[in-house]
Amino acid sequence: MNREIIISPSILSANASRIADEIALLRTSRAKFVHIDIMDGRFVPATTFSDEFVEKLVPICEGLVKDVHIMVEEPWINGPKFAKMGADYVTFHLEACPNEEVVRTTIRLIREAGSKVGISIKPATPVETLLPYLQDVDMILIMTVEPGKGGQAFMPECADKISYLANIENRSFLIECDGGIKDTTVQIVKEAGVDVIVAGSYLFGHDDFAERVETLL
Image 1 (cartoon, rainbow, N blue to C red):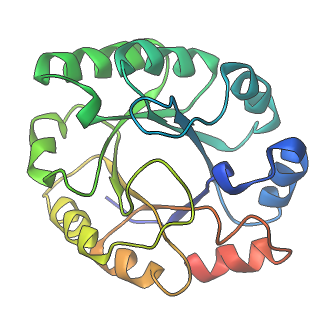
Image 2 (tube, rainbow, N blue to C red):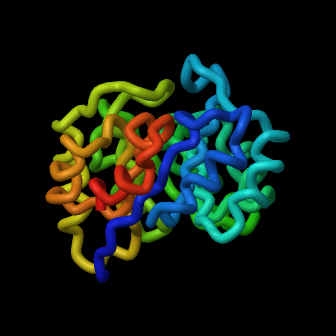
């Protein structure tokens, strides 16, 4: 597959009270995705955006690829919900599913609801656990920090998982990474073979947003 680096700014680090302005700032850059983290306070300790917030956000993000990452329990219920709201990708956590049958059901239900499907794994989860599903998903999200909060330090050892996936012959899925990505760490994941780079605190909260995106491409 032809490789193009895609930047997916994470609105977890944006100012939610002025989200329309933040998305307008994102549009001044070459970022093509917008990354929307959903946390339920159970799968991870933190909570983030409500369903009502996401419903209002979707039309504001028209023309951008809405990249929704659900760090929640029962993704077979919650994943299709966000697909129906207009997510282009819904990525759920492998660890939130008790067995392979549930993983496959979750993939099917999200796709039937109208979204492309991704699976994510935490830093401690072996990349080999993804092998049964690689032909069935559109994206794999490798967490390069522990999921649940922004601003954590990048874990360079997680780049080995990206390399493993990037070297699979005839792969049809995108490889995304999320956590601690900035100008000083981005080269590690690019050399490993990443396709989609999530960045939050490095981008939002800075007047030179578009210039910072350029340092990641």
